[in-house]
Length: 347
Image (cartoon, rainbow, N blue to C red; front, side, top):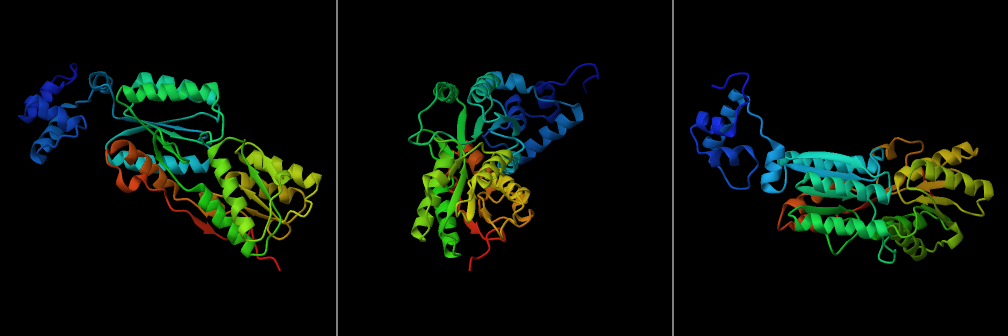
């Protein structure tokens, strides 16, 4: 046995368990090589008796990677990203990996700095959850530099996976934003709505552009319309949604019957802005969102939205990074229109 003053080593664990050093290492360090279950349990029991703790930093240096998954999101407070994070953590637990999470605050320069720092820590997987430039969006210098950092990280043996949108150059856990928004547009037109305004993010962001384009296509198919002046650009936040709808109401609705916010967080802000203007959300002006975050069914009135299985999206993201043949993980997750009281039928 090892004295209390001397930390146990891997050699001590192997000797205590009566196995080779290689078997002890594979049993404790998450090796992909199979270990006889009896030997593995003997190693685990020996490690517990001796109080052995693996040196994760040394392992990372030796293998060029670690047992850490680095998750980078745009906004930790946004339920969209916290739900995705829950899925990543659940899948990581199955693989005995540890998830660390940080937020970019939607700042491209901060995102670049975070990725540079993470590269030095050698995580096994880097998951980026946030909107990327669309196919027509010009990449900023920070975006170009970020792509170079990600390329270097992958060349050193790391795995990068993106969440949302499409990027042919990288593994991406996808959802069909265009199809989901188009289905919502058709459903709302079917309820009798004809004049819409869209509350969305900055031009060039893939998620915002795909949802805007899909919604426009859906309402046109259903007999509605969307003027360019009714596309309201604002930050992808609750306060952004509030400000955009508040300002539009102050300037005059001009026949707009429904605000579609391209995420639920902005839609929650829109509901508050309508209420603060002395109008009844749903009855006087309808509101719809996208994502079906947990609060969407709890606000008043409950929010019509497009349901995205966000936790499943997070699970698929990590599976894509870990599996050579990801199979179903590469298939876009299915979205579903959920009609609630914020968009009652029009007479």
